[in-house]
Image (tube, rainbow, N blue to C red; front, top):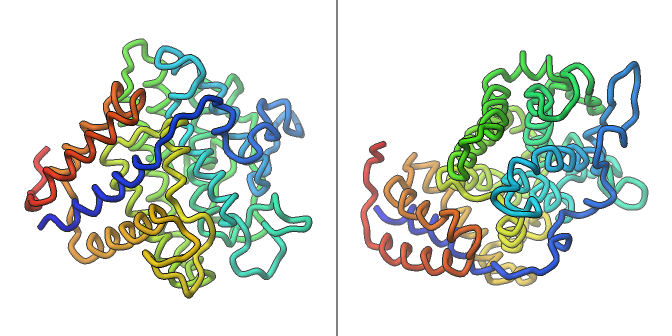
Length: 352
Protein backbone atom coordinates (compact mmCIF):
# COMPACT_ATOMS: atom_id res chain seq x y z
CA UNK A 1 0.00 0.00 0.00
CA UNK A 2 1.11 3.58 -0.63
CA UNK A 3 -0.10 5.02 2.66
CA UNK A 4 3.18 4.79 4.56
CA UNK A 5 5.52 6.17 1.89
CA UNK A 6 3.04 8.94 1.16
CA UNK A 7 3.18 10.16 4.74
CA UNK A 8 6.95 9.93 4.72
CA UNK A 9 6.86 12.15 1.64
CA UNK A 10 4.49 14.62 3.29
CA UNK A 11 6.80 15.02 6.26
CA UNK A 12 9.88 15.57 4.13
CA UNK A 13 7.97 17.85 1.81
CA UNK A 14 6.72 19.97 4.71
CA UNK A 15 10.29 20.27 5.95
CA UNK A 16 11.45 21.66 2.63
CA UNK A 17 8.50 24.05 2.46
CA UNK A 18 10.09 25.86 5.42
CA UNK A 19 13.49 26.42 3.79
CA UNK A 20 14.58 30.03 3.50
CA UNK A 21 17.75 31.89 2.64
CA UNK A 22 19.74 33.31 5.55
CA UNK A 23 22.59 35.72 4.99
CA UNK A 24 24.23 35.60 8.43
CA UNK A 25 25.42 32.13 9.38
CA UNK A 26 25.72 33.02 13.06
CA UNK A 27 21.95 33.59 13.14
CA UNK A 28 21.53 29.85 12.55
CA UNK A 29 23.55 28.68 15.54
CA UNK A 30 21.75 26.91 18.41
CA UNK A 31 20.84 28.86 21.56
CA UNK A 32 23.79 30.10 23.62
CA UNK A 33 26.32 28.77 21.11
CA UNK A 34 28.62 31.76 21.57
CA UNK A 35 28.49 31.40 25.36
CA UNK A 36 29.41 27.72 25.27
CA UNK A 37 32.99 26.43 25.70
CA UNK A 38 34.85 26.17 22.43
CA UNK A 39 38.06 24.46 23.49
CA UNK A 40 39.17 21.98 26.11
CA UNK A 41 40.95 24.74 28.03
CA UNK A 42 37.54 26.27 28.81
CA UNK A 43 36.74 23.31 31.09
CA UNK A 44 38.13 22.63 34.56
CA UNK A 45 41.09 20.30 34.97
CA UNK A 46 41.64 17.76 37.74
CA UNK A 47 44.61 15.41 37.89
CA UNK A 48 45.47 16.19 34.29
CA UNK A 49 41.97 15.39 33.00
CA UNK A 50 39.39 17.75 31.54
CA UNK A 51 36.18 17.53 33.57
CA UNK A 52 32.94 18.14 31.67
CA UNK A 53 29.47 18.28 33.19
CA UNK A 54 27.07 17.13 30.44
CA UNK A 55 24.12 17.83 32.75
CA UNK A 56 24.71 21.53 32.25
CA UNK A 57 23.36 22.87 28.97
CA UNK A 58 26.40 25.02 28.16
CA UNK A 59 28.96 22.34 28.98
CA UNK A 60 27.23 19.70 26.84
CA UNK A 61 26.84 22.24 24.02
CA UNK A 62 30.55 22.95 24.37
CA UNK A 63 31.28 19.31 23.53
CA UNK A 64 29.50 19.83 20.22
CA UNK A 65 31.26 23.12 19.63
CA UNK A 66 34.69 21.54 20.06
CA UNK A 67 33.64 18.67 17.81
CA UNK A 68 32.50 21.08 15.07
CA UNK A 69 35.70 23.12 15.40
CA UNK A 70 37.97 20.08 15.28
CA UNK A 71 36.28 18.58 12.22
CA UNK A 72 35.87 21.84 10.29
CA UNK A 73 38.96 21.26 8.18
CA UNK A 74 37.54 18.04 6.74
CA UNK A 75 34.52 19.91 5.34
CA UNK A 76 36.40 22.92 3.96
CA UNK A 77 36.35 21.41 0.47
CA UNK A 78 32.54 21.41 0.52
CA UNK A 79 31.95 24.96 1.85
CA UNK A 80 34.13 27.74 3.29
CA UNK A 81 32.48 28.38 6.67
CA UNK A 82 31.88 24.82 7.95
CA UNK A 83 28.18 25.13 7.12
CA UNK A 84 28.19 21.76 5.37
CA UNK A 85 29.62 19.91 8.36
CA UNK A 86 27.12 17.08 8.85
CA UNK A 87 27.64 17.15 12.62
CA UNK A 88 25.60 20.37 12.84
CA UNK A 89 22.45 18.29 13.22
CA UNK A 90 23.51 17.20 16.71
CA UNK A 91 23.88 20.62 18.43
CA UNK A 92 20.92 22.04 16.52
CA UNK A 93 18.63 19.25 17.77
CA UNK A 94 19.99 19.72 21.28
CA UNK A 95 19.34 23.45 21.01
CA UNK A 96 15.75 22.84 19.87
CA UNK A 97 15.25 20.51 22.83
CA UNK A 98 16.47 23.29 25.12
CA UNK A 99 14.40 26.10 23.59
CA UNK A 100 11.25 23.96 23.57
CA UNK A 101 11.62 23.05 27.27
CA UNK A 102 12.34 19.38 26.63
CA UNK A 103 15.56 19.20 28.68
CA UNK A 104 13.79 20.24 31.90
CA UNK A 105 12.61 17.88 34.63
CA UNK A 106 9.30 16.54 33.26
CA UNK A 107 8.21 15.40 36.72
CA UNK A 108 8.63 18.99 37.98
CA UNK A 109 9.89 17.62 41.28
CA UNK A 110 12.99 19.78 40.93
CA UNK A 111 13.73 23.16 39.35
CA UNK A 112 16.13 21.54 36.86
CA UNK A 113 15.58 23.25 33.53
CA UNK A 114 13.29 25.92 34.95
CA UNK A 115 13.80 29.54 35.86
CA UNK A 116 14.87 31.02 38.17
CA UNK A 117 18.22 29.41 38.84
CA UNK A 118 17.89 26.07 37.07
CA UNK A 119 17.35 26.94 33.43
CA UNK A 120 20.77 25.64 32.31
CA UNK A 121 20.29 22.36 34.15
CA UNK A 122 19.75 19.25 32.00
CA UNK A 123 17.50 16.76 33.78
CA UNK A 124 18.34 13.07 33.90
CA UNK A 125 14.58 12.44 34.10
CA UNK A 126 14.09 14.01 30.67
CA UNK A 127 13.67 11.39 27.93
CA UNK A 128 15.03 13.87 25.42
CA UNK A 129 18.11 14.67 27.52
CA UNK A 130 18.90 10.99 28.06
CA UNK A 131 18.53 10.11 24.39
CA UNK A 132 20.66 13.11 23.48
CA UNK A 133 23.37 11.98 25.90
CA UNK A 134 24.04 9.06 23.59
CA UNK A 135 24.28 11.51 20.69
CA UNK A 136 26.70 13.78 22.52
CA UNK A 137 28.90 11.69 24.82
CA UNK A 138 29.47 8.80 22.41
CA UNK A 139 30.33 10.82 19.27
CA UNK A 140 32.45 13.18 21.38
CA UNK A 141 34.42 10.46 23.16
CA UNK A 142 34.76 8.43 19.96
CA UNK A 143 36.29 11.53 18.36
CA UNK A 144 38.77 11.74 21.23
CA UNK A 145 39.57 8.06 20.77
CA UNK A 146 40.05 8.53 17.01
CA UNK A 147 42.76 11.12 17.58
CA UNK A 148 41.17 14.05 15.76
CA UNK A 149 40.57 16.02 18.98
CA UNK A 150 44.26 16.42 19.73
CA UNK A 151 44.23 14.89 23.23
CA UNK A 152 44.81 11.37 24.49
CA UNK A 153 41.93 9.01 25.25
CA UNK A 154 42.38 9.24 29.02
CA UNK A 155 42.40 13.03 29.22
CA UNK A 156 38.64 13.71 29.47
CA UNK A 157 35.98 12.59 31.92
CA UNK A 158 32.25 13.35 31.95
CA UNK A 159 30.42 13.81 35.24
CA UNK A 160 27.54 11.46 36.12
CA UNK A 161 23.95 12.59 36.74
CA UNK A 162 22.48 12.63 40.27
CA UNK A 163 20.70 9.28 39.63
CA UNK A 164 20.70 6.32 37.23
CA UNK A 165 24.47 6.55 36.91
CA UNK A 166 24.77 2.99 35.61
CA UNK A 167 22.79 3.82 32.45
CA UNK A 168 25.58 6.00 31.04
CA UNK A 169 29.30 5.92 30.28
CA UNK A 170 31.71 8.69 31.18
CA UNK A 171 35.07 8.22 29.47
CA UNK A 172 36.54 6.57 26.41
CA UNK A 173 37.36 3.34 28.19
CA UNK A 174 33.92 2.74 29.73
CA UNK A 175 32.07 3.76 26.56
CA UNK A 176 34.18 1.35 24.51
CA UNK A 177 33.38 -1.49 26.90
CA UNK A 178 29.69 -0.63 27.34
CA UNK A 179 28.82 0.31 23.74
CA UNK A 180 31.54 -1.19 21.54
CA UNK A 181 29.52 -1.39 18.31
CA UNK A 182 28.35 2.20 18.44
CA UNK A 183 31.77 3.55 19.40
CA UNK A 184 33.26 1.56 16.53
CA UNK A 185 30.78 3.13 14.09
CA UNK A 186 31.56 6.64 15.29
CA UNK A 187 35.26 5.90 15.04
CA UNK A 188 34.74 4.62 11.48
CA UNK A 189 32.98 7.91 10.67
CA UNK A 190 35.95 9.95 11.87
CA UNK A 191 38.44 7.70 10.11
CA UNK A 192 36.54 8.09 6.85
CA UNK A 193 36.48 11.89 7.30
CA UNK A 194 40.28 11.82 7.26
CA UNK A 195 40.44 9.88 4.01
CA UNK A 196 41.58 11.95 1.02
CA UNK A 197 39.02 10.11 -1.09
CA UNK A 198 35.94 10.77 1.07
CA UNK A 199 32.81 12.07 -0.61
CA UNK A 200 29.73 13.70 0.86
CA UNK A 201 27.26 10.86 0.28
CA UNK A 202 29.52 8.33 1.97
CA UNK A 203 30.13 10.73 4.86
CA UNK A 204 26.37 10.73 5.40
CA UNK A 205 26.28 6.93 5.27
CA UNK A 206 28.89 6.65 8.00
CA UNK A 207 27.23 9.37 10.05
CA UNK A 208 23.75 7.87 9.97
CA UNK A 209 25.06 4.38 10.73
CA UNK A 210 26.63 5.74 13.93
CA UNK A 211 23.66 8.01 14.72
CA UNK A 212 21.05 5.26 14.56
CA UNK A 213 23.29 2.88 16.51
CA UNK A 214 23.52 5.47 19.30
CA UNK A 215 19.74 5.72 19.51
CA UNK A 216 19.33 1.94 19.45
CA UNK A 217 21.60 1.74 22.50
CA UNK A 218 19.48 4.28 24.34
CA UNK A 219 15.84 3.80 23.40
CA UNK A 220 15.08 0.74 25.54
CA UNK A 221 16.91 2.16 28.54
CA UNK A 222 14.60 5.09 29.08
CA UNK A 223 11.10 3.79 28.38
CA UNK A 224 10.19 4.51 32.00
CA UNK A 225 10.59 8.23 31.26
CA UNK A 226 7.40 8.21 29.17
CA UNK A 227 5.30 8.19 32.33
CA UNK A 228 6.45 11.73 33.15
CA UNK A 229 4.82 13.14 30.01
CA UNK A 230 1.36 13.72 28.63
CA UNK A 231 0.19 11.06 26.18
CA UNK A 232 0.63 13.39 23.16
CA UNK A 233 4.23 14.17 24.14
CA UNK A 234 5.08 10.53 24.86
CA UNK A 235 3.58 9.57 21.50
CA UNK A 236 5.65 12.29 19.83
CA UNK A 237 8.80 10.91 21.45
CA UNK A 238 8.08 7.47 20.03
CA UNK A 239 7.23 8.86 16.60
CA UNK A 240 10.35 11.04 16.63
CA UNK A 241 12.49 7.93 17.04
CA UNK A 242 10.72 6.28 14.09
CA UNK A 243 11.03 9.40 11.95
CA UNK A 244 14.78 9.50 12.57
CA UNK A 245 15.05 5.96 11.18
CA UNK A 246 13.41 7.17 7.97
CA UNK A 247 15.63 10.25 7.76
CA UNK A 248 18.62 7.94 8.15
CA UNK A 249 17.39 5.77 5.30
CA UNK A 250 17.13 8.90 3.16
CA UNK A 251 20.69 9.92 4.08
CA UNK A 252 19.18 13.22 5.14
CA UNK A 253 21.85 15.98 4.96
CA UNK A 254 22.29 17.22 8.53
CA UNK A 255 23.99 20.47 7.57
CA UNK A 256 23.60 23.86 9.22
CA UNK A 257 21.14 25.51 6.83
CA UNK A 258 19.01 22.43 6.27
CA UNK A 259 18.58 21.35 9.90
CA UNK A 260 18.04 24.90 11.16
CA UNK A 261 15.16 25.44 8.77
CA UNK A 262 13.72 21.96 9.23
CA UNK A 263 13.38 22.51 12.95
CA UNK A 264 10.90 25.31 12.31
CA UNK A 265 8.27 22.64 11.67
CA UNK A 266 8.89 20.76 14.93
CA UNK A 267 6.71 21.35 18.02
CA UNK A 268 8.01 24.53 19.70
CA UNK A 269 6.94 23.39 23.18
CA UNK A 270 6.15 20.23 25.12
CA UNK A 271 2.77 18.84 24.11
CA UNK A 272 -0.07 19.09 26.61
CA UNK A 273 -2.70 16.45 27.27
CA UNK A 274 -5.25 18.50 25.32
CA UNK A 275 -3.09 18.89 22.18
CA UNK A 276 -4.49 17.05 19.17
CA UNK A 277 -2.68 17.45 15.86
CA UNK A 278 -3.47 18.81 13.32
CA UNK A 279 -5.71 21.09 15.40
CA UNK A 280 -3.27 22.72 17.83
CA UNK A 281 -4.25 26.39 17.73
CA UNK A 282 -0.89 27.96 18.58
CA UNK A 283 1.09 25.76 16.17
CA UNK A 284 1.64 26.71 12.55
CA UNK A 285 -0.02 24.70 9.79
CA UNK A 286 3.32 23.08 8.99
CA UNK A 287 3.97 22.17 12.63
CA UNK A 288 0.52 20.61 12.86
CA UNK A 289 0.95 18.72 9.59
CA UNK A 290 4.37 17.33 10.46
CA UNK A 291 3.32 16.25 13.95
CA UNK A 292 0.21 14.57 12.56
CA UNK A 293 2.24 12.88 9.84
CA UNK A 294 4.90 11.66 12.26
CA UNK A 295 2.27 10.11 14.51
CA UNK A 296 0.68 8.30 11.57
CA UNK A 297 4.09 7.15 10.35
CA UNK A 298 4.77 5.66 13.79
CA UNK A 299 1.39 3.93 14.02
CA UNK A 300 1.60 2.36 10.57
CA UNK A 301 5.21 1.34 11.09
CA UNK A 302 4.35 -0.19 14.47
CA UNK A 303 1.54 -2.35 13.16
CA UNK A 304 2.94 -3.31 9.76
CA UNK A 305 6.71 -3.19 10.16
CA UNK A 306 6.90 -1.81 6.61
CA UNK A 307 9.70 0.36 5.27
CA UNK A 308 9.21 2.65 2.31
CA UNK A 309 11.97 0.96 0.35
CA UNK A 310 11.35 1.98 -3.25
CA UNK A 311 10.07 5.41 -2.27
CA UNK A 312 13.06 5.93 0.00
CA UNK A 313 15.47 5.50 -2.89
CA UNK A 314 13.52 7.93 -5.06
CA UNK A 315 13.41 10.54 -2.32
CA UNK A 316 17.09 10.08 -1.58
CA UNK A 317 17.90 11.22 -5.12
CA UNK A 318 16.50 14.63 -4.22
CA UNK A 319 19.14 15.08 -1.52
CA UNK A 320 22.18 15.10 -3.79
CA UNK A 321 25.00 17.51 -3.01
CA UNK A 322 24.11 19.75 -5.97
CA UNK A 323 20.45 20.15 -5.01
CA UNK A 324 19.69 19.28 -1.41
CA UNK A 325 22.49 21.31 0.06
CA UNK A 326 23.39 24.09 -2.32
CA UNK A 327 19.95 24.65 -3.85
CA UNK A 328 17.06 23.99 -1.43
CA UNK A 329 14.50 25.35 -3.91
CA UNK A 330 15.50 22.78 -6.52
CA UNK A 331 15.25 20.05 -3.90
CA UNK A 332 11.75 21.17 -2.95
CA UNK A 333 10.67 20.90 -6.61
CA UNK A 334 12.28 17.47 -6.83
CA UNK A 335 10.45 16.31 -3.70
CA UNK A 336 7.11 17.62 -4.92
CA UNK A 337 7.49 15.76 -8.22
CA UNK A 338 8.58 12.59 -6.42
CA UNK A 339 5.61 12.75 -4.03
CA UNK A 340 3.24 12.88 -7.02
CA UNK A 341 5.01 9.91 -8.61
CA UNK A 342 4.93 7.84 -5.43
CA UNK A 343 1.38 8.71 -4.42
CA UNK A 344 -0.32 5.92 -6.35
CA UNK A 345 2.38 3.30 -6.13
CA UNK A 346 2.16 0.14 -4.06
CA UNK A 347 4.63 -0.77 -1.32
CA UNK A 348 7.32 -3.06 -2.77
CA UNK A 349 9.74 -5.39 -1.06
CA UNK A 350 13.12 -3.75 -0.58
CA UNK A 351 15.83 -5.32 -2.70
CA UNK A 352 19.34 -4.01 -2.05
